[in-house]
Amino acid sequence: MTLNLKAWGRIGGLFGLVVLFSAVFNWLFVTGSIASAGVIVRLVLGAGGIAFWLITNRGEHPLGRARSSAR
Image 1 (tube, rainbow, N blue to C red):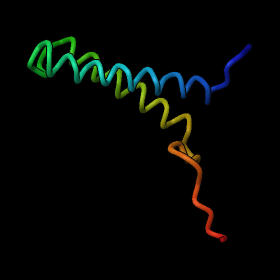
Image 2: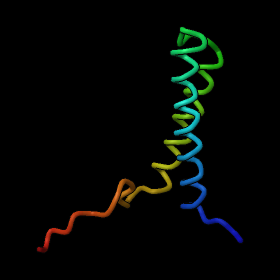
Image 3: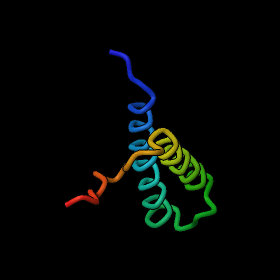
């Protein structure tokens, strides 16, 4: 099974979301500081994964179906 770019974008977006939550958890409950190297690396990786998802899904409605103008 081969994955196309859109599927890789979805994987990257999920990875980014998980890593971003990990960064926030680490910042709030573990280190207590955003200046920690682990928090900064996780924030950058999370933002990169979400950006990759947005780039691979541009031109579509990534958060749901488009509203129909004809009723």
